[in-house]
Image (cartoon, rainbow, N blue to C red):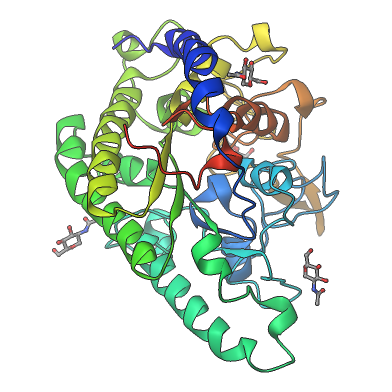
Length: 385
Ligand SMILES: *[C@@H]1O[C@H](CO)[C@@H](O)[C@H](O)[C@H]1NC(C)=O
Ligand SMILES: *[C@@H]1O[C@H](CO)[C@@H](O)[C@H](O)[C@H]1NC(C)=O
Ligand SMILES: *[C@@H]1O[C@H](CO)[C@@H](O)[C@H](O)[C@H]1NC(C)=O
Ligand SMILES: *[C@@H]1O[C@H](CO)[C@@H](O)[C@H](O)[C@H]1NC(C)=O
Ligand SMILES: *[C@@H]1O[C@H](CO)[C@@H](O)[C@H](O)[C@H]1NC(C)=O
C-alpha cells in the first residue's frame, strides 16, 4: 500500500486550522506533574542498561557526552516530551542508583514486546521486561510510593499520591512483537494472525493503569519498521518488495495493519474507560515522511546507520554500534559514529538520532498527527467525537 504521509501532513494542517482554534483554543493546559512511560528502546532511558549492561559509547555522545542508557546519540522523543512539559528526564524504574522519581518513572526497556516471548534474551534478543511485566512494576511502584511517601527519607524522590491520577501516561511499544514473528520465520499472514492477541494484551495494560487512577494516555503507534537498516539487512527481502524509497513493504504493511487495529482498540477503550482521555499519535506517518523526504527536511542517508560497521546499510549484526575488537590486548572501537549525526536520521540501524527524534517530537507535539487533534500539553482533555 502506498503510504499517505504527505496527505496526513495536509490533513493535519487543515485540522489544526479549522478545529484547533475553536476546540483546543478554549481548553486549559493540563500541567502534568509527572509522566509514566511504558515501551521499548524507542523510549528506554536506562532500563535495559540497568539490568543487562550499559549501552556502549558512542551512544549518548551528542547531548549527554557519555552513555546514559539510551540507544541514540542523544535525547529520545520521551526526553523532548518531558522537557516540553517542564519536567525532568525520566529515571528508569530499574535504575537503583541516582534515580529521582519525583516527577515520574520509565518502565520501558530496549527489546521489550507487548506479549511475553517464549525465548530467553540470549536466544532471541528480546527483553524479558515485556509490557505485562512493566505493568506489574508500575503497580508495585504506585503501591510502594504511597507507603514510603509517609516516611520522611524517600518522599523527595517519589511522586506525590495525587500525581498518579494527574500524570501523563505514555506508551510506545509494538514493533518488536512484529519482528519477533519474522525471526521465527513466520509468514506475514502468520504475523498478522497474532496481532489481535498482542493488542488485547496492550488494551489490558491500559485498563490496569486506568484501574489505578490513570486518566491521560498518549499512545504512539508503531513506526515503519521496514525502513530500518537492521530489518533490511537481516531479513530476506525480494526486489518487488522494496518500495520507491528503499523500504521493505511487507514489514511496513504489517506495521500499518497493527496501527489500524491499534486505532480501533483505542476507540473501544474510550468507550470502556469513560474518564480517560486517550490520544492516538500517528508516529508512523511522521517517521515515514522523514525517511522518504529526508532531504527536504535537512537530513540525508535515511536508510544508512550513522553508527555501525560497514555493509550496504552500515549495519553489521555481529558488530553493532559501539562494537570493539581486541588487537594485541588493546580494545579498538570498530563500529563508531559518523561525522555528523545532526544531519542523519538513523543512528545505529535500529534507532533514530537525536536530531531525528527532535524533528519527530516537533511534528507530534502540536497535535497535527493525533486523534483527537489536540496538543500534547492538553492531552488530559477528553474530547467526545
Ligand atoms: C505543528 O508543528 C510542525 C512542526 O513545527 C509545523 O510544521 C506544523 O505546521 C504545526 N501544525 C500546527 C497545526 O500548528
Ligand atoms: C528530584 O528532582 C526534582 C525535579 O527535578 C528536584 O526538584 C528535586 O530536588 C530532586 N530531589 C532530590 C532529592 O535530588
Ligand atoms: C508462548 O507459549 C504459549 C503456550 O504455548 C502461547 O500461548 C503463547 O502464545 C506463546 N507466546 C508467543 C509470543 O509465541
Ligand atoms: C529460520 O530460517 C533460517 C533460514 O532458513 C534458519 O537458519 C533459522 O534457523 C530459522 N529460524 C527458526 C527459529 O526456525
Ligand atoms: C561483520 O564484521 C565482521 C568483523 O569485521 C566481519 O568479519 C564480517 O564479515 C562482517 N559481516 C558482514 C555481513 O559484513
